[in-house]
Image (cartoon, rainbow, N blue to C red; front, side, top):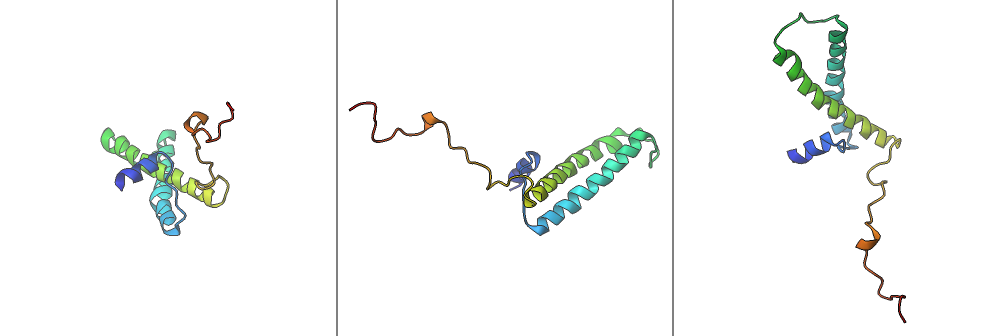
Length: 114
């Protein structure tokens, strides 16, 4: 289950129409990502809300991994909402791969000889 979840999360294929799951994706994805993105902008501009610290593990790497995960949830949330609003095609509306001509069986009634 977890391998499938992470695979679909990082390949942007985690789609749902369930309002409960959408609200969880918003709560644990969009809100923390927007807060971290705002803090990152303040840090880059120089108006830091926290005093400067030289411990890079706690100040950059851990929030970076957290921002990566929440960013993936945010992108999948936005794609799910766009799919519900029919702005982008859903999985059922995409054409299926039928294969190439050489993968198909020849017809039973061949017309190349008589």
